[in-house]
Amino acid sequence: MKKGFTLIELLTVVLIVAILTAVGLPQYRKVVQKARAAEAESMMRSIYDSSERLAGEFGYRSYDKLVAAKGGAANYSFKRLDMFDAANLPAGCSLQDDGQRLQCGKFDYKISVNGYVAAKMKVKPEGVLLLLNRDDLDLYCQGTEDQCDIFGLDVVSGVSF
Image (cartoon, rainbow, N blue to C red):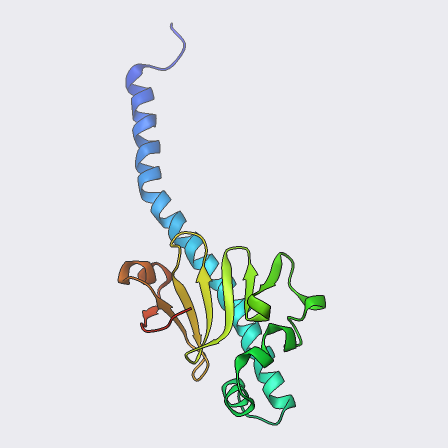
């Protein structure tokens, strides 16, 4: 009796692996993108909380009201936030643009852009904005419909990073 596999058995195994890959790979990519969105959301919520604490220290009810009353976001950048000053930056993060932008791995963050805390993706889909609304704390996406569907987020427009 001969030992080994027949050509039909090998082709069957290859076909099964190909089908599993075709089905599994898109799902894997979707899970990776959702994990990235969760990472950005966590950081944006930390930025939001820290900016609201800063506003409270000055007697204002929100960061946007503080900036409007005191004249410009340049004076109230990441450098002024308790969790994001130079001594407390998260690992792998750095301040850019005189403290107006926080660069971390796959995202760039801004404290306030048109009423949102913003995260701009630096990996595929590059340039997509994930936005945390400062009023209702919901997460939104600015990109194409397909890009935002991957994250399961509603699309907004008109926000420039």
